[in-house]
Length: 358
Length: 86
Image (cartoon, rainbow over all chains, first blue to last red; front, side, top):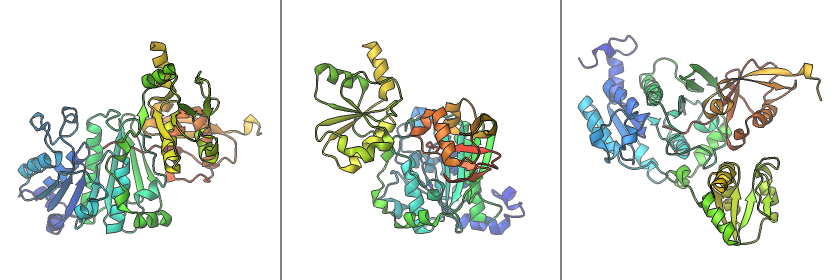
């Protein structure tokens, strides 16, 4: 009786309901995307739902993470989600993984699942999910959001393209405005998460047309929406197959690395500390730093001009907002120079305004 | 250089943070004839310098493009930033 309205659908029927009961879906992230996706998948009678999340419920989650209540604050999300979903549908086997997905646990967790849904908020984790799914031969439903907009795609499905085919260039660490939150309207992950659940159900049932080879981008604030076609790129698939999952560390993008803030830099300069400054902005960008001996090498030329850098000491890397300089710091760290490299948080914008205040 | 009269105005649709920087999803960008996606990226970055810090994709007529995709017959160009949140 529970599934009567669903079984009544001509392309679901009793056979389809049986397929749902036999299916195992792994949800990575029980957050804004995961909560609504899980609710609909559990309600639909998907046989097994695995839930991976190492985070704890916070008050600021409740405007969009609809499985949680104020009484859950401080508890692990995967464990709370399992309780709520069990109450919703006791037929479903629920498996909590109260840990962050990383290169060490990913293959153990994902083994045996038929579909993976990506509901993480960490760009690096998306590459881990991709490479994991390519290596295990599991389709996955990608979803992500920014403020009022979001995107969905079905990847690694029936010989279709993978996440790497969509964006061969991995975004640099620190490229995103803020790991914590750029702000989001609560209903937006609800829209994207339910589209992800819908794609997962279509894959399990083998019905309709999925978003394989297509990226759905929507902006419900302006009601702009596009479906972008993209092709499988064998080079990228080979890269995913060959990728060493152990190199993916959790929350890599949130790692702020070595940085100093504007006030600290002002203090060091005032004290006459011996530090080197490297400005990686384009030469025309203003305001210029009115401190003597600032080395200016635009980011694009940096790797070709490493010999101009000091041989030792502390090097503070500067740009307009502290984002390009973070990328420069990563490049310099990779180049293995015998320097202590620090990123100026907030860049010249922060430095100039703190100077005003001082 | 080309005469201004030979410049072509392209219709852009921007998503996510790019739409925020540009001040709205619908934008126009004028490019010389024969321009490719790489030229568009340069021109877009001049107008919105934040793009220098962003790994974004370009789609031409709802198809993901590469840097050498020609824009001559493009009806619409989409700028797609990566979305981070979940």
